[in-house]
Length: 262
Image 1 (cartoon, rainbow, N blue to C red):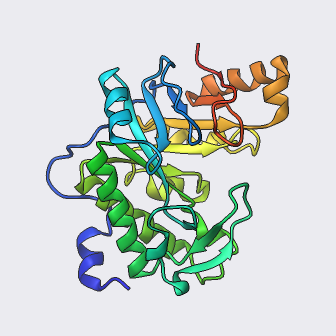
Image 2: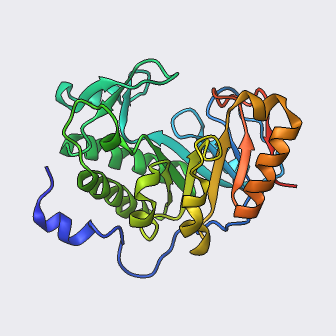
């Protein structure tokens, strides 16, 4: 577990000195693909892709084409297909996630070992040249993880990740975790949400937009995929809120893509 000295030095999410990492804009467009060969043909400002599965050369090629690259990894679950899975201890892993991704278990984000693994993942993101990171599954306190996680332990963990990312010159996004948006808006640089229209929670992101921090949202519902009228109504609402919304397959494999941006 982390000591008081660390909490005093890093718990506020700042890395000290002048900020030197990329700051995305609320007008930035994006593409999100975590599976299969990356389609690099979209005219967008930001690509959100998998940290492990994307090569340094692919990241450099996207950047050479004028894109910023956000690298995805799970910060709150173990995934038994990842290269560093063996580094987790049995005590770090709790209940399975209820998700389409088989082989995931919730992590005890209070664990010093878990935090060390995540720092190594941030090192990898820095080495590969990522501009930012998207740590996923950072709402364990609100799920049946098998651990006594709380709102306070979750805030501490996300602020730890933010401080470590910024210290490496990386922007960092807040994934979902809508209940803690107000508490964390000053610690992170952007937000990634899944289905804020579906769950009627998009307006909660006004605090991010007001502070000039973009909200990248994905919708998966069949009615947005297949019904042009429903999709248009949803997209109009998204544009009013200044949220960058895509309609995507749940597998995030680029099987299709419908954007609310012009």
